[in-house]
Length: 377
Image (cartoon, rainbow, N blue to C red; front, side, top):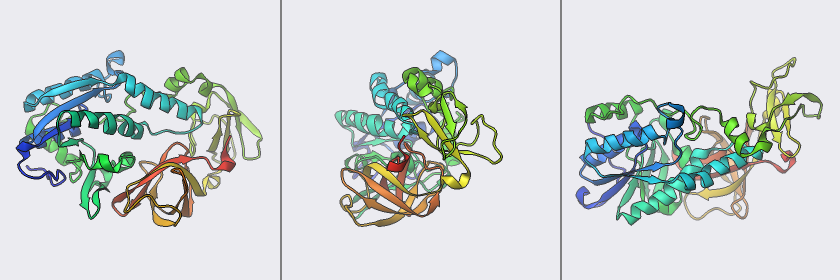
């Protein structure tokens, strides 16, 4: 079986190019290293030690835990490539975990994997790859990097069910020029078949389903330990401010949530917004979730030309990683701010999530969803 490597886009003989592979210990990054080594590239594997919960809780399969480091080392030994482990725990805590806790304290629902890619993997690790004389940094992400008329473009993976382009939208143009995603054209079942073909011990290893630094899934416990104010009790109210019940901390809630409210009502109620200043959770019927406009911050533009200024741009916006993109118009402002105006009202738009912008298969960029001025608590 062969795997497509048209994403590599490196001239000449593969043996003339060193490629650093970010090896997490999972099947995707392991197969990435294997197919590149088989193609003749000078492959160097690097694993980032970010946050070791696995050893503490005795649970395998938690991303970046001690078992994953050992799995990555075993794969590198099997492939006959050098492998290094870099201790990034301090950097990861400051850039990702603290940001995660702060977001919940502000009543937001963060996406730490995006921050990790932006602040650790595609900045610090990319710099390390350059220091090692590499021509490229390859990862096991399911996305595609295609040559365009004005430089490389970021596109969705061919397998929609595995597409991870949502988590990569903050990649800078200069970083995209150095990054490679060899698995972007493969379905997951072919990746696992390749792992079996290469004799990799991780061929049947389950995919991680958790946030890597919260392998037990109890993110609220972590948030309340780091930011106790996010666990202070408050009122659950309706849109008119009438108290319907009490809660044990806004860290337990996200916009659009229905279950776990702990209140009885004649109709299903959903979280409409969180007001951290007053510690109120505002709930209402499903139709009250609909929004036609959201504010964006820290807009990162990967589309054609420089970052747009004022003209409205028709595109599709993905508001959560698992949601289908919806038709919208981007109206940029100044200092990385912008507004998204939807063709039809959309529900469960949670501040702290990312709005990732697409033109068909191409990622145009995106920004962080912020509260509208009228929603600020």
